[in-house]
Length: 290
Image 1 (cartoon, rainbow, N blue to C red):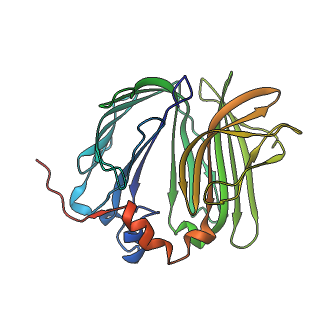
Image 2: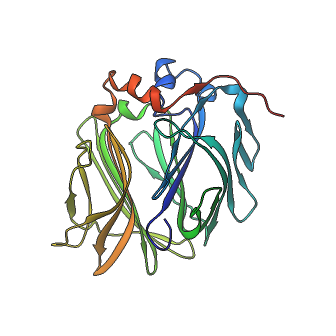
């Protein structure tokens, strides 16, 4: 998020694009044949790009992850993302530029999301700075950043019905909440506090607090001090099964703003959604590197 709070960006690298209808229709047999670097910008002139690409578009080393014309690379201290993507309808534009994520430190935290470790959350750098330089007016800015990963050996909808996640920038570092309802009815509820040196500690969970439903009526909730009512400050991504937004809440008396996500996997399982998603997520099976 930008320091001024009016702009934000998210970048997700996929091997096995979990929200791609093409990956679902393929039977999810070959994750490397459904790869993507999803780039979304939020605020004035924001765009959404998510192209499902085939195995010929994937190149990897220990420090580089390339998907077609875009790549992520680790230079030993920073995560550098080079972007060259085309946004989906209704606003089709090419988006080029570079995003640099500068961690204050790296953590060693891993959180299993299921008892059999089929899904793992790995917050690499919860406290970071971010520098954005995209070739559009107003899209050169700095702000607070975050870098994590999720790994899984099963589809999300096979194990979960609903989850929310939030990362909030605080005076001392960052606080993350992970709440999920599994298909068997069990609950995951976790809260971690990270300082600028990368030290992590589990903290007591503040009470759950309701947020208004999204434009697509996705249920939303986060964590807050008792009696405080969180509010949305910036709408980012709104889909029939998914919501991403900037949310203000209060933790230990400190008002904080962070990125919040809510995911309704019961809706995502609906096969009628897949053709709708295909409009926003085009498939490009072949690619040739120079």
